[in-house]
Image (cartoon, rainbow, N blue to C red):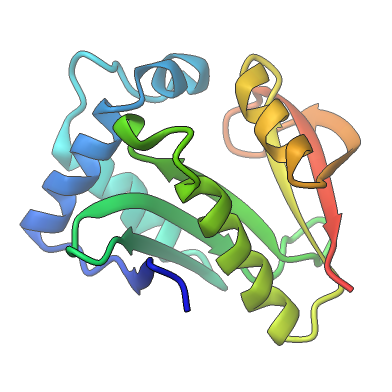
Length: 166
């Protein structure tokens, strides 16, 4: 049993404030992604973006909490990508103060196991080309580069990665 629990984002003011803190704890990611100013992350923008994500057909925005119910990460899962019909991990974000503690590895394991239990043979994700730390992380977990292309939403250069689940 995992020391982490996953639950859908309910969009309470408390949860949104926790997610804003989660983003703020990751200034390097914010700068690489270019979506948020790490010095001024607005709660209403985070909420709107996550509502849009959660409103996408087949997408879930999940909060990861530890045994003390502290928010330690965020995971966005897409059941079926419109381009290739594979399941995707749209975002995995671990609280900046918890990097290199195994939380990310646990979250990836939970996502992989979920898709495996649904009979899915593989899962994909995209890593921003300007985020070499993320590429190193995913590669260390057995993910392999299969393509390079711009992301659908913002046109940023990305490395598409795949992992076989069988």
